[in-house]
Amino acid sequence: MSARSTPGAARPGSVRTAFVSGERLAGWAERFGAAHGGFRLSDDDDGVRLVAADGTSALLQAPWPPDGRPGRGTDPLERLASVASQPRTAGMLLVRRGGFAVAVTREGAVLASKTGSRYVQSRSAAGGQSQQRFARRRANQADDLVEKVAAHAAVIFGGHSVEYLAPGGDRTLAWLVMDQPALRLYSSVPRLDFLDVPDPNGAVMRKAAADVCAVRIQVADAPD
Image 1 (spheres, rainbow, N blue to C red):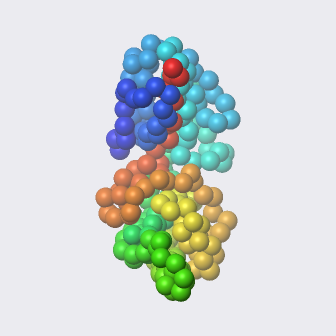
Image 2 (spheres, one colour; image 1 turned 90 degrees about the vertical axis):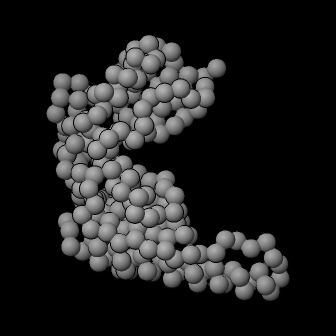
Image 3 (cartoon, one colour; image 1 turned 180 degrees about the vertical axis):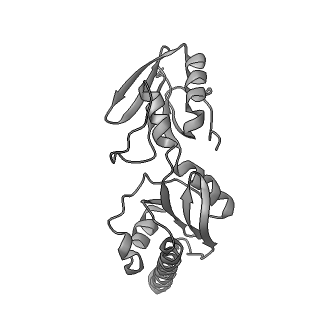
């Protein structure tokens, strides 16, 4: 797996997110320090935080919730990289109005998957009865999409030991899918941080599969 982005210049005060694999985390931190005059490191409940000499900060978070499988290493960065490198299996569920992708992923690889398109119309500016008919049609399209995605996910997930659910795309649609009777067996499975992805397709799915098991890094540039 490769880093999803590298430290670099951005608008002062902005916040951006990167996904970096465990094996590349040490290199990312080294480049971050070189770009910002070094950093001090703290380990707290939110994750591992790097505070640079120029005021830039980076919050590094493990892909998995704490569950008794700590990483190995002499400092928080090494332990975080170790945790991210642990092989774990996630059921990924990405859905937007324009389509969906469900997959089982492990170590950044897609083990089984299904993608498809199911267009749900955008909101209409029309009024009166026309708007009401449009709203009903749109609701029916969304219901059909939700049921279809849940059914596909149940089949794809069923052949694997899924440790986590990784939702992404449209939050409302994703929550509706996960609440479907077809996925009742996975109602108690821990859910990972939500993935912000565009309309799912094969390429989006493969990138998300790598991001699921990578360290999530939120870089906040120094204020003015």
